[in-house]
Amino acid sequence: MQAILFAATTNPDGSRHFYETLLGLKFLSEQPHALVFDVDGVEFRIQKLDQVTPVPYTALGFKTGDIKAEISELKDKGLAFEVYPFLDQDALGIWTTPDGTQIASCKDPDGNVVYLTQHPDKN
Image (cartoon, rainbow, N blue to C red; front, side, top):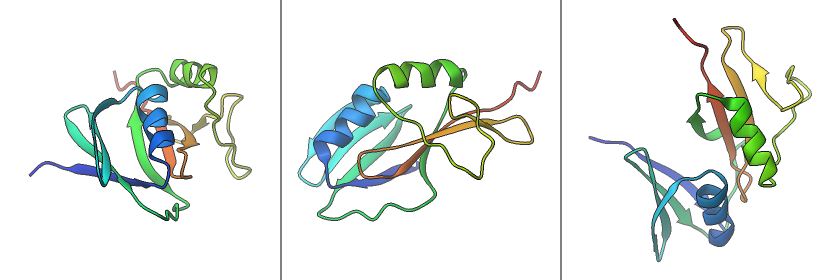
């Protein structure tokens, strides 16, 4: 079996812009009930719904090799990153976990939390 990722939207145009133009995912098709993307060989379907209730935790995450460069590029495109009062984040919005993993989060047009993660080098 192979995993399929799911999210939901009430704003298909905004979601397509967010995931395709801002995050750079490969758009495959628009179907009557979903937008379909490719995420490194994994199908990602964004269901078109009349109502979406975002959850307060991470809905989707992406691993990156250079989180600072990714955030800078995304901020240049107009994407805002979340600042949480309960986390010790740097000026870019990056929180470093005790094991050295760096995490930053933003929200898609429907309020779904999307994480960027960079794991520490394990040389």
